Structures are given as structure tokens and as C-alpha cells.
Image (tube, rainbow over all chains, first blue to last red):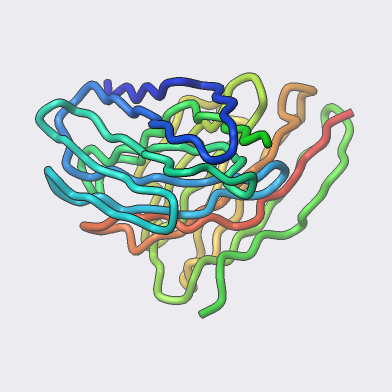
Length: 112
Length: 113
């Protein structure tokens, strides 16, 4: 059974600081997705990582995938308040045949 | 391109009643997945439909059911509602094939009294 673990689950960081959210998964896969959820809202797709070594960047967020280590990271650079949200990673075991398995989410709070 | 839509957005029911939620996927998407989100259990997978067939099913009781129509629109039904069914129900659509990036609707907030 595929298990996806995120850490930390809660993160409070100061504006301007850098930090990394980790997403570990238990079974080999080369497809991983990152989502953002604002309070009371739905999930928004952030990044799609489709191969070992994939790196995607959007603004202050950068996601990478290491399939050998079964690890994805979401790096936050010079955090701003607008990045406060819950971030989920999701792993796709057999595309088209198995459902995405989501981590529990990391609740990020950026404070001044 | 229009996004995923869900109706209704909010719903209040009492224990024992049943409820039907609706989801219209992005045009061209053949896969629709349903999730239940609660503060305690997080995001839990209910089921996925692809081309009118249930392709995957999560670990929920039989009170939870769904279906998909030929135009890919999907409905989920919960019968004999319990207090614990209060949650945000999210629908997501995708192409459902090699790249399974899912696009989520705004959700239906169900409150069971």
C-alpha cells in the first residue's frame, strides 16, 4: 500500500525566510503533484513532476523530485504572507489505474 | 476553459436523510474523482469514475455511491446520513490517463445535524 508522508505538518515562518517542505513516499513512482489549498477553498494544482530529477519553479516556490530517494521537496524562498496556505503532495502509482494518494498536508503560516 | 463546477455549494441535512451532489468536469476530461475532506481525517479518496465506469474505490461504506453519465458529469449519493458525514466534498477531474493531474472543483460543504 502506497503511503505518502509530509513533514512538517505545521510550519510557521517569518517573512523573508527560506524553508523546505518534504514529501516522502513508500513505493516507487515517477509522478508526483503538489497542490495548494487556501482556508475554506478548494485545491489548486501547483506543480506536476513527471520524472526523476524534475524541477519546476513558480515565483517563490520550487519543487523537485528524486525518485530514487522517493522524495519530493517544495522549497520556499523569501516567504511572503500570500504563501500562507496548506500544501499537499500527491503520488500517482500507476497512472490511469490507481487513484492519487495524498499526504496529510503542510499548513504554512507566514508571519511578519 | 471552464473549470470544474460542483452543486450545490452548501447543504444542510439531518441524520437519516440522503443527499446527492453533482459535479461537472472540465470539457474533455473523462475521469472524475470524489474526495471527502475533514479536519480530523484529512483528504480521503471516495471513488473515481472513468467513461461511466467506476475505476477505483476508496474505503467508505456502501452508503456512499456514485455514477457518471455519458457527458462525464458525475453525481455522488450518500444515504442514511450520519453526523460524521459532515465534510467538504471535493470533486476533481482529469484526463485520467498517463498524466493524472487533477483539477478540483470548489467543493460542496455538507453539514449533517
